Amino acid sequence: MTTGVPPTRPARPRRSRVLRFLPLGIAAWLVLEIWLLTVVAGAAGGLTVFLLLVAGVVLGGMVIKHAGRRAFRELSEAVQQQQSGLAPHPSERGGGNALTMLGGLLIILPGLISDALGLLLLVPPVQKAVSRTAEKTFERKVREAATQGGLGEAFQQARMHRPDGKVVQGEVIRDDERQPRGPHPDDPQLPPR
Image (cartoon, rainbow, N blue to C red):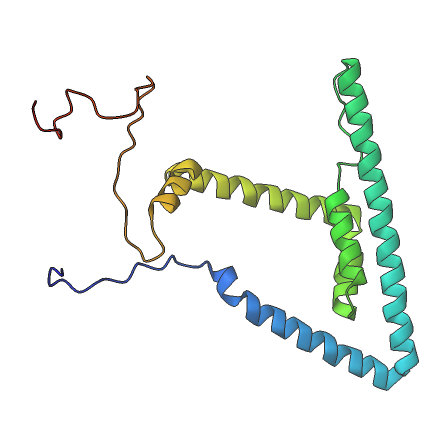
């Protein structure tokens, strides 16, 4: 049975500007990396480019391995201090293991631009600046989510909407007392005796 009202399409959530242009940016980055590798291969030779790519994989692997070991060592020290009842002391390096690993991953990726970015992320002042910027951005996003109803409310709204955009209204009534199975004599659906 229809009511004569045409079905409305659900409003599509607005994508952020970053998500909208991310595929285009990745494609441009790949084209630039390939072009730069061909320019270097034309100037220095294909063997030189191959050796640069192999050196990047080896160096990036060493960086990731070193940062992983350091992160594991810091984690075990923190667990030991917590178990002994001592207050954990902040590390003097600032804990830039994640950015160091990201730098190593960028070095492993084939391409000269990614290698340069990876090497840049290994410089401690750059790590601190990127870390501060990321922390401020994260705190701002959390504050925005809290002022727009909170994350819990967003998850609740996501659960109530069906994929076709319709909202299912309902109420859950839970009876904590166990009631015996079968019809009750006071049930209004049963005919009177």
